[in-house]
Image (cartoon, rainbow, N blue to C red; front, side):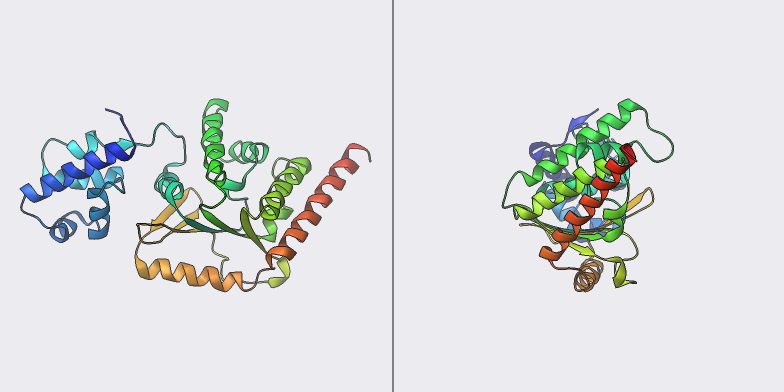
Length: 279
């Protein structure tokens, strides 16, 4: 049974979780020990602020009832097509008040143009059908709509110079993509910083990181690798990720110098594309 994920279904799901926990005579802490789900996560689920993943739902069913309620009535993501490992991070992204990201190779999803995103989603292995790719593309472009509100979320983007120098989709696609980032930066909608190659080794070498803050939740960190990703809620881990980000940010170019560099690289892509057309 597909239950649409929205604030009302989450609220009802959380109320049922609290009702069954209390009927079993368990505190949140006791249920946490039984299910190996953090007490904070249980509290957020009961308040309707979070949805469990399928593994959480099955552990709740094992602890609280024989009818598989929590798996059968688990709210789904409105049919949005995303990589499975990114599903939880997508939920957080939609309600974040502050987002700070580091990208080592690719432009972050919320900043991607349609042509760039299509090129990214057309790559990878195993190959995707056009239908699957187009569904993923729709979701990715919808994510960018969080930038329609000028005030929230506040977005800082830290880009490795490799992001600018790549040729995802070809020179003209890169030119358009970089100018889109410049436009967002010049309009003050985002703040962008570039880590140039001459910095050498830096604190963020290990991969993509997205740090998020919220009005009514503790901050989280989302860390992504090859076909994998994890949301970290443990305060000590989140704090470490924040410190590493701040350390790398100290090595980056200023916002103004970063925009100048991105403009310059965009022009290089454009000139190279014209040369390729008319050698």
